[in-house]
Image 1 (tube, rainbow, N blue to C red):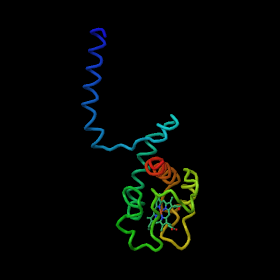
Image 2 (image 1 turned 30 degrees about the vertical axis):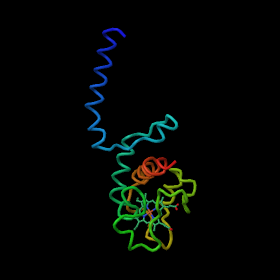
Image 3 (image 1 turned 135 degrees about the vertical axis):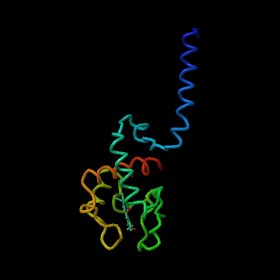
Length: 139
Ligand code: HEC
């Protein structure tokens, strides 16, 4: 190892140490699909998706998607535990299927269509976020 290499290693180590608290505090979504396939999802889309989820979905599906949000106990049927492998409507759990359910809503449940409440862009973003931050994390 040359002197230059050593300096570089130390500098990188220090940079990582400096970044570590920021990384855990902000708890950024780990891009599971990026790890799996190398295809990066636009972080801006995910950021919007997370915002929409916190605002429109968390109350029923809970902060981690387990179906245990504060309003869940008022729902019959209860909100789906999105971390469970078995889904009934967006069976293949792809972004496109999640988007379809969000547009259509589910009859006779609290899961209404979001076509009026959210823009297409927001529906798309939250579908991506659910896919990245909840679905792919279970696999
Ligand atoms: C008022 C409560 C409520 C809100 C708000 C809500 N959901 Fe749901 N969600 C439900 C219920 C209830 C079901 C259907 C459960 C069933 O039929 O067993 C459901 C089902 C789903 C499904 C289908 C799962 C499957 O089995 O295929 C997805 C995906 C989903 N919700 C995502 C979301 C997202 C994303 C949001 C926010 C944009 C959201 N939900 C907001 C209550 C809610």
